[in-house]
Image 1 (cartoon, one colour):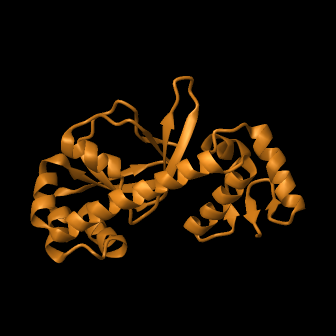
Image 2 (cartoon, rainbow, N blue to C red; image 1 turned 180 degrees about the horizontal axis):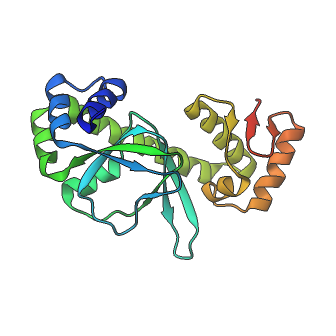
Length: 214
C-alpha cells in the first residue's frame, strides 16, 4: 500500500470527524513517519517542521529535568494529535518537552507550510485543534492535581487505573522503573507500594507485566 493510501486509511479510521476536502488536502501534503519503541520523536529545544497526528502506537510526553530526571505529562494514542507540535510548528517555536515512542509508532506529519490554510479553510480542523488543546490542558490539570493533592500510594493507584482505561486492557507491560520515572519517584518506593497493593488484592504482579484487579 502506498503512503497516500495508508494516510487515507488512517484518516478514515482514526479521524472520521475530518471533512472530505480536509482529508483530500492531508492525503496530498502529509507524510508518514515510523518510529521504533523507545525512539525519540521530539526533543527539548527542537524546532518543528510539521505537526503530528498519531496513527499507530503510543507516545509518551514528558519534561526532562536539569539533572536528567523525568516529569511525566501524558500519553498520546491513535486518533490524537500532539498539541505542542501544532503550536510550535505554526509559530515556529522550540519544543519545551520530550516525546518518546512507547510502542512501535506511526505518525502522520503535516508540513507547517499549510497550517494557516488548514485553520482558515477547514472548520473540522479548526475544531479538532481546539479540542486537542482542551484535552491536553485537562490532562495537565489531572497531573497537577495528582501531585498537589494526592499521596504517592493514591497517585500510583490513579496512574494504574488510568493506564488500564486508556489501553483497554487490565495487563500493563511496564516496569517498576518506568512507573517510578512517570511519577517522579524511586523504583524502590514503587515496588514497595505495588507489593502493598498486591496484598490488598488490587493488582497481581508478574515477571513481565502488572495486572490491574480493582
